[in-house]
Length: 237
Image 1 (cartoon, one colour):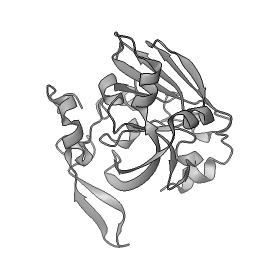
Image 2 (cartoon, rainbow, N blue to C red; image 1 turned 30 degrees about the vertical axis):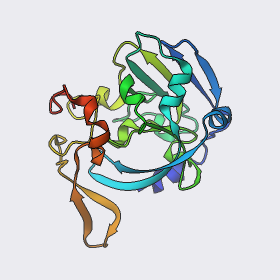
Image 3 (cartoon, one colour; image 1 turned 90 degrees about the vertical axis):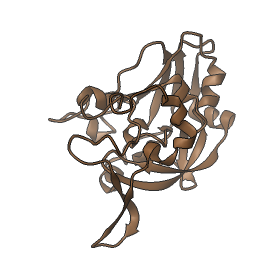
């Protein structure tokens, strides 16, 4: 349900906007968002999206591969991870004004470099054929379709390559509930609910929600399982 974010996001201004790419790269740069889109273009990707709260939907994103931007930045030999930072504007974003269970701001996320370079990993600038609406992460967000949705950080302002695993917001808040990897896995339950199945948004009836079994890696295992072949996915969740 996006009604609350949609209603409360009207003051947010996604232009002008810049994205800093820095850290362990040979070509650090600050990109204007429109120059970024012009340089790397937009393609439509129809991806399954799986929320950690056990619902799913199919989304037609517009954007470009994160790997294209990273290759332009030319990672140094020591780069192992990619850290992402979101915007902090409490005057425009009511949820950043604090509260009993508020996250620490800015929202931060991270990927291993090989995950970030995978061709499925997208920087999305649009959805449903239009620019991203404010509540969906305007003007640019991450989309990693084999991971739970909270990994797909919104309203990105900085992308930093590093040799250390970066902190991530939900893992800092509740490390026993939200791992760094956050790969969709029906065999690893959330402490408060099962991940074995998911409600399909937009299907079923008012009285009977459609559900289906959850697939490992959200159904993208053929493409991404090799990234984790030496890992115990129950321990490194």
